[in-house]
Image (cartoon, rainbow, N blue to C red; front, side, top):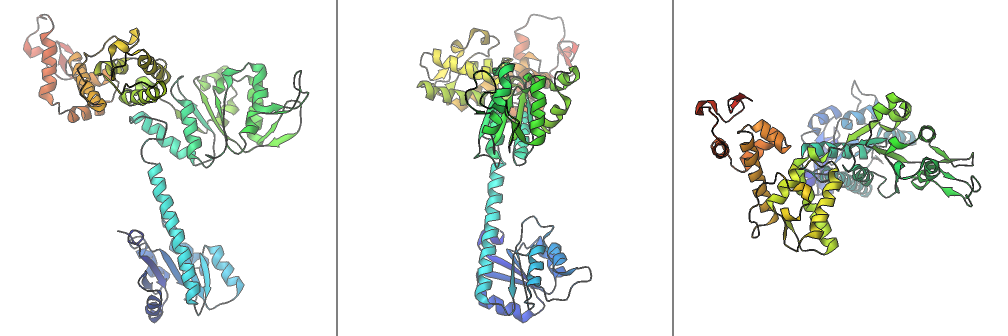
Amino acid sequence: MSDLDCGQKRIFLIDSDEAFGDVLQGVLGDGYVISQHPSADATVAQLASQEPSVILLNVDLPEQPTANGIHSTLLHLTSEQTLDIPVIVYGTDKRRQKAMQAFQAGAFDFLEQPLDIQALKFALDRAWRRVSLVQELADAHRVLCSGPVEGLLGNGKAMEQVNEIIRKVSGVFTSVLITGESGTGKGVAAQAIQRLSQRSKKPFVAFSACSFPDSLVEDELFGHEKGAFTGAFQSRRGRFEEANGGTIFLDEIGDLSIPVQTKLLRVLQERTVERLGSNISHPIDVRLICATSRNLEQMVKQGTFREDLYFRISVVRIQMPALRERGEDIPLLAEYFLRKFAKAHKKNAHGFTPGFLSALTRHNWPGNIRELQNVVERSLVLADGQAHLGVRDLPPELRTFVVPEQEVSTNSFHEAVQGFKRELVRSALRMHSGNKLKAARELGISRCYLHRLLNQFEMNGAEAAAAFDEFEAELPETGFGPEEITVGPKVAWGKAV
């Protein structure tokens, strides 16, 4: 347990006068624990193992051979520490220049000798509050950086990578390009970056280039002055000015025409905007996030997208995975949408049958998360009021390749999901003769995740083989002997796998 955890305030006192340390301990009382060291060099070795709350440094001590005054001593003490340790220096030199040197070197405070006890206590109290605040911020940062980013549901590896990049890029001011198929959540990712950034309280302005004709895009982005064109009866700010101080999200940026791309590049380079019909530049402070479902690299080669603009907007790239690559996340997403729409439509459904979930997992999802959202809402609206949505509530195109349903009326949603996963794993193993690699591909999950499921369901090799035996018994005679039919990756049904 550290000093900060138990409430003690550890002071590293750097002073060669041993009696001074004893006197100081008696004056400050039990709230502080003083560890005295005769020199700076003797202190550095113990900083990592006994992290102090505050360092008290006597600058009248003889300098070390490698030292260069107060500046180098302070850097020597604190430059390599993970926690910012306040350094309070004291000395007999009352010249203002000495104090200024201490502050320039990074000192937290400067006191004159002989020490005024009240001034010392005040300085220590201020230093302690600073250490406590740094600790609280570090704890909050650890909580923030653990688990998925709010709004981006998913526990699979693909979403873990997306979450990690979003957390890193949200803390810096740089352009971000989010790519991925339509419906994968690019707009949600952009909002997450804004929400985690220092601009979270500032405007977030979204603009979709494909929502306006080319003749209006420039006016929407950059605004116009009164009389700039027919019908411009008054001046109007564009989206960039509306987002000043915050973030602008340009969706489907690949749909911008070359002239608009050229003006956008100039805005990004000069950090100013000129409205239509005006030559006056308006300064802007905007963080740019772009998104596209098109291949911008290919468009650059074809000459339909400016290469210099591409490099300007893609300092950091985030690739949003397609839903078919996130099979393990589908039950979680479906549950989220069910709760959302059940509340909105005042329905009492709160779960799915295994058959319903098997259909969701096996579907290819060309419309990605947006399609899944629509399927769940449609199924809920057309259901007959039962607690669990079943296969009969699915759209017709999703009712193929459904694992037989089990009765789950007495089970919770999570129990139903676990039963569905187990049955789905058994079905995939039977389908591929016990070949775990092919079963994992069939399920759209990694082989490692399949092994975790097998361990979770306690499905050992014997049970996997039994699943295969059930499959074999349902097929007609093949002419192969038992020795030619094995469960595993080497031989199955007399053919190399």
